[in-house]
Image (tube, rainbow, N blue to C red; front, side, top):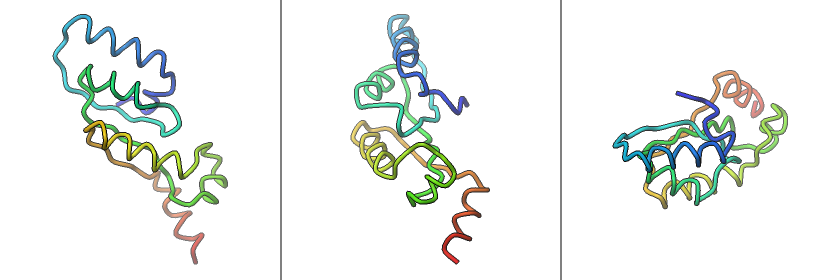
Length: 108
């Protein structure tokens, strides 16, 4: 699975249009950055067969995200989950284990 699939939204759009125009019947999933997609792109991905999204959300605490220089905001993650749910995508979030340990230490 490509961990930077939505890094270049224009490329994803082109990829999805290629699947659709060729009539390829495939179900697929990908990882997505919470700051690199929108509802239009998500709709196009759905039409192309994308049914599962994995979001790399290392923390729900903005201080932690800033500390690890993630470059995203907690609000972006919340919007991503809501948007994916509205578009019927199955979604999940995952944590890098070193960040999860770091966050546990943060609250001690």
